[in-house]
Length: 467
Image 1 (cartoon, rainbow, N blue to C red):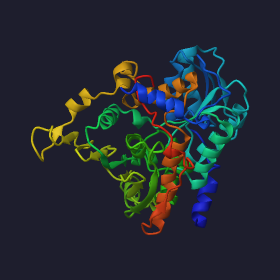
Image 2 (cartoon, one colour):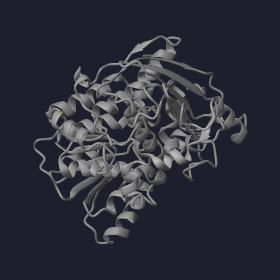
Image 3 (cartoon, rainbow, N blue to C red):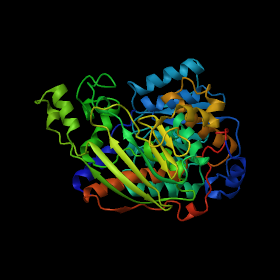
Image 4 (cartoon, rainbow, N blue to C red):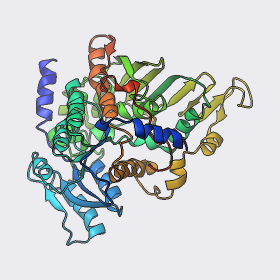
């Protein structure tokens, strides 16, 4: 690790933190899950007492999704941003609980989350803070016996992944990785197709984070998105902390949106696992160009040298012989896309062109057909049951489902559908891709965070219409 990277990590952790199907399979899966996945000290509950660490723009979405549920009681919020995050969160709380509510505020500096986690009346906490804070906050919560719902990103280093796994295994505390794209309606329909063998045996999958974030990484210090080219101390919201990762790091910084959904289709950590990866990155041009185009060549930020390649491509191998390609593309002008592709011996689906081809079923050989009819026919039972409840929820309804799954697993004292082993595996892609890029694309071995249990663990994600 270079001194530059070391200094960045050191400074980052001190920065502000503002911010269906198959019933028999279900019974088998529940019977065979190890005790490590269950918190024996937690009895089933009818209401979950929830706290929030980080109530910035992402955290407030989770706050509102939880607070409108009858089976959740919001009891505490934490964020050092007293100027924006806390007032916005308190407004949401007031709208649902009234102005004289008893929700406790923790906003006395960056370490006040420790006081929140010292409470004995918190059942679960949702962590939506800047990436460099995730592990320390999640580990402490688990040590305190507080169930964790953790927002997604990539780890600062591999040790963070092991720290999360070790804390979970030592405490038995439930842990849920809040990857909402796993619940996207078309993705879940394709998962249903996979499970019904429409594509045959799977061979290759693709996903990624292809999202023009220039208006997120820069603002004018007044509005959340765009309006200027400031970041760091002069920026607000994500521009205050997220952009610095693009200055100091070069790898796939946000792998979970692509890897999480395709991982459920090939049963990662449950009968399959990742083995290795190799990553390459293009040169870095997009962020500098954006600064010059919008702030002028003499702006002080035009002198900043961004390390993050504009496009990072990662190729992964699995124990069962599939390959996965991930792409990270956030610095250039482009329409939003997660670049999904699911391909097997019988056909494939491609998200970007909204098309599908199934040999022997598609009307014309070697010719795409629109996927709409298939997506409707194979609509997942979860969406058929809860689609109306998800209307108005964030990200086209996905945020309802990811919160619903977290809450229901806690209420029932059942294993989390996306657990600590999944999140550790997703998070590990970032430091491993950084290492591979730095070494000219050299192959990196991916740790087995299940310590061999992937061979006997059974799939449990979205097997029916419960959660």
